[in-house]
Image (cartoon, rainbow, N blue to C red; front, side, top):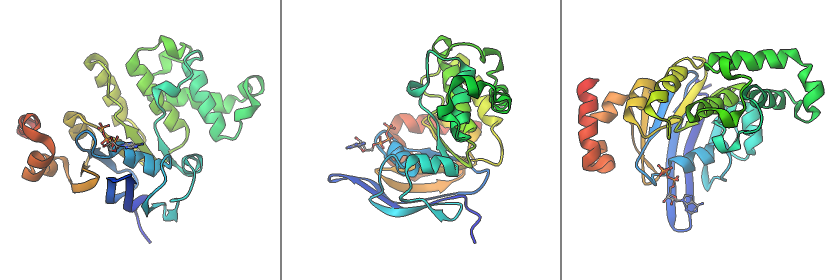
Length: 260
Ligand SMILES: Nc1ncnc2c1ncn2[C@@H]1O[C@H](COP(=O)(O)OP(=O)(O)OP(=O)(O)O)[C@@H](O)[C@H]1O
């Protein structure tokens, strides 16, 4: 019996001659806050695609709650609780924030094709949608059309929709990317308030976000795991500094460590 919720064991993936996942092993326990970092082209997005089932594995196994989901479709994985954030580009811009979350919840509840009128009678699902929006600080914009939202709020809505799918494991792909610094704080606060029992894998470039959010960090370089450790261990590793970060990053890391 294992207490790991998600186990990715020996994952392999190649695009032609390019090996983008080489024996990648990653484990997440319930409630774990785990960050995945690595330079551009390291294979982070590929790993998320392998975990979520968008890409087929070239080798290895993925277990969710001890069950082998290596061959499950993305939607099966979502139903079983392995959820990746919805991309802003997949939001329904012409619908309200509430309607977007409601659609996700009703889909989870198996009601997606009963559409608007009958669905709107379902006060439980609407109540749950409001609850999630409040949780993420989007309560005030519930009736606002998504295309009228600030970008940071749209990114929060991605997370709201993922939460609506009742994740056990949540894959967050660069949630702060593209968000102006004035709005980023709100998003970081929202990340702090995510339900503590959910295991979260955060793909992130910004080390300040990583340090604030994660208790464990995995560094991926050229499709291989360079190291896994606490943010401080990772940030103070010479190997990480020299192999992964380069000169600009070394300066940044040094200042991060100094402020840790
Ligand atoms: N469908 C594909 N076909 C061929 N090569 C691909 C494909 N998808 C990604 N790659 C290549 O695989 C490597 C890993 O890409 P990936 O996007 O996973 O890296 P990443 O760590 O997410 O990078 P970034 O931080 O820039 O998003 C890159 O060299 C990329 O060009």
